[in-house]
Image 1 (tube, rainbow, N blue to C red):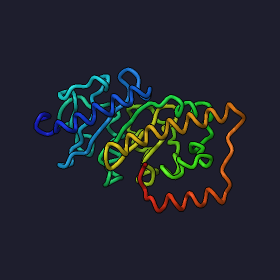
Image 2 (image 1 turned 180 degrees about the horizontal axis):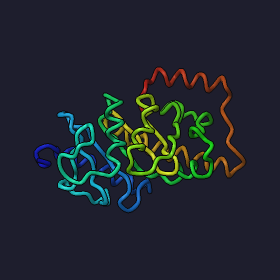
Image 3 (image 1 turned 30 degrees about the vertical axis):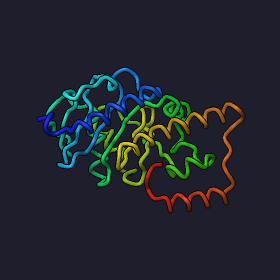
Image 4 (image 1 turned 90 degrees about the vertical axis):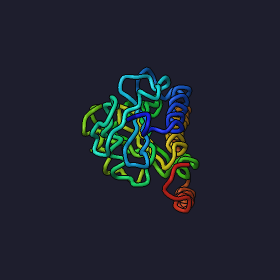
Length: 220
């Protein structure tokens, strides 16, 4: 079943994404998961308990949109991926990783509802803003349920005390979202250490937001 449903190029894309995530310290051990919505509507997703950087083609699982397992041993967080695909018709890829600096913001400042973003022009243009999804126990249905209020508006989501999720219409967009999140979190951390975060002037923020509207609801 798996060999006939999962194309070789999809496996290669998943493997490349995993390698990039490990290289950038966005994953450790067997953490995280990557999924792809195939043309037939089924979802190919990485297996549970396996280091994604070393995943083999026969270790990819296949599930239905409702989370029903067709083959393999899918990630315990499959319902989180299903929630994205159910609410976002254009989503073809979902990446869940554990970017350390971004997560640290939710641990140190639990009062935040979004990652501070009005101080970085690139973040406004590339993502609009990055909301923080309330904490849910990993592997539970709540992981998917908590995402729903933020979908399909946001393509990068910071998961409180857990990790992050990025989705896209292609794998490059989803990967860009994850990298963009951690890079912005690192800039904010350095700014905080150097004396504090300062916003751009309100007039400039408004102009950048208008530019973001023209770019469209996608991650760049």
